[in-house]
Image 1 (cartoon, rainbow, N blue to C red):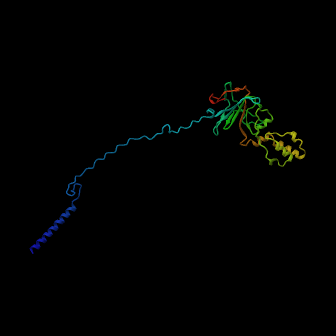
Image 2: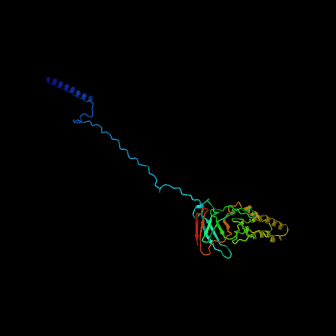
Image 3: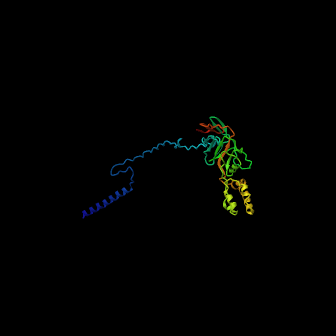
Length: 294
């Protein structure tokens, strides 16, 4: 009996001790200094963080001279080498005088004034004169500075002009061939009548109209013998439609009206050597634009 009571007392005391220990463990806070597995842990103060050194500033990449876009220098045609050049020289023969042909090498929309430019050879020099840009047969035809466009060319002949004018050819200047003697004929590019325009005329009249060449005026010796009312109708039609005035009125607005060719005559002793020569072309300021030898 005493033994049982003693065991009961020991059990109660053990329960009290365990409960006390458990309560103490819960209430005691854990810190970095608390033992872990029986080993004291020393607290470590955090290492100071040193600021990262500032990276050296790198200058922005710059373009080298080879990378820089340099605008192309624009040289006006009057100063540009080869903008106008000597393309050929024709030596005199029994039927033609000495002549020099100048051509252009221009960009779209460019023009160049060559009046006052100088042609120099081993035997002398001449200056390029003015010319008529729009030559109209029977008109005033005032000469002005000779301004070339892209594709234009100039034939400079060492002989007196048959019409005492220098000019640009056009669709109607072919009529000049009937009136003046040119050592090289003027191209005949006059417009021709369409058949529908004269199909109402007599067969005799139609045959005659069809026989006429470009820039050819009618011959009264042929048309006057046409008899009767049909003959009168034929003559009236031809006189009204086949003439110089009608040519200009009907074609001067045509985009093909002006030719690329200019004719210049210099009433001057030729400066071109019959065998070999060295030709230079200078602008008004004395700048060499082209040179040519043969």
